Image 1 (cartoon, helix red, strand yellow):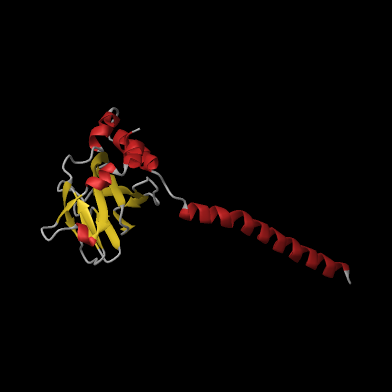
Image 2 (image 1 turned 60 degrees about the horizontal axis):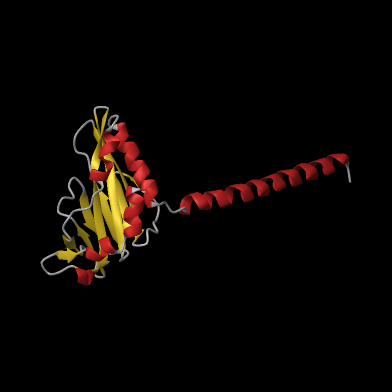
Length: 201
């Protein structure tokens, strides 16, 4: 075998080995990043950053802004779903809620020039096991009974940032929403102590 042939094979082997090593190093990290679950604490920290970005000292109002409504009788809708319903407090403005067959979407679209919205949201089971924290002008979550979806955000107008209120959405079976479109969400707030502890600690 000539020296040039041996050299060519050595280069090819080295390149292949290098590619394999790169694949082994990069692939697990990519999968972990794509599917890593967030926590209520992550949401809390993100919202506190938004509040402070509106001005020093605004973070002091965090507890007031994350307090759930006092009433346990909320409006509800099944939307296009036959299996699930979503309960929400009447004071969910300025967000828009859409319930599809298997997805809950919360949006805040801007129709004003120079104004933009950035929402953050997370869906958590009653034991505070959460999915990914979502960010954007439109957030979508899978419809899963026994979950609480928490949404907040920021509004930027002509370079000035302000924080938006927190809204809670409780996903329950379709039967939990009455014909009058009212649902009782007592269980969501008596069985989710882990969620509120992380939200307020």
